[in-house]
Image 1 (cartoon, rainbow, N blue to C red):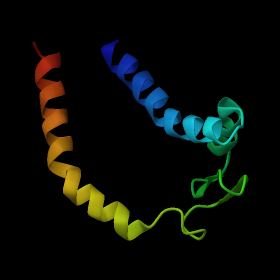
Image 2 (cartoon, rainbow, N blue to C red; image 1 turned 60 degrees about the vertical axis):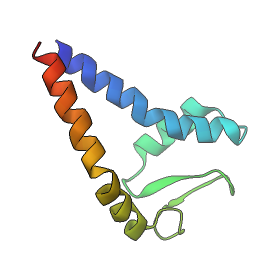
Image 3 (tube, helix red, strand yellow; image 1 turned 90 degrees about the vertical axis):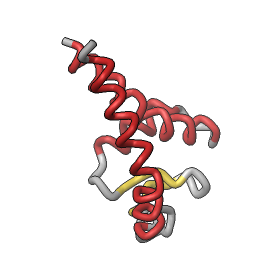
Length: 90
């Protein structure tokens, strides 16, 4: 049961950045999030131009920078996962 609760928490956490960006652009965050979820994987919301675009082709997401951040923050992620596993077994 805790597993499914954890999944729901992660789902909500992943929606929040998109919703916040849409709200800051003056749009309804829940509507934008649903449109993004129904779109193909590479499509996202460009709040500056108020359109849905391929995030890599539009230059919003740079795959090189994503991998750099993954390597930089990997140790923190491993630490957090290890701690959360340890706490759930107590």
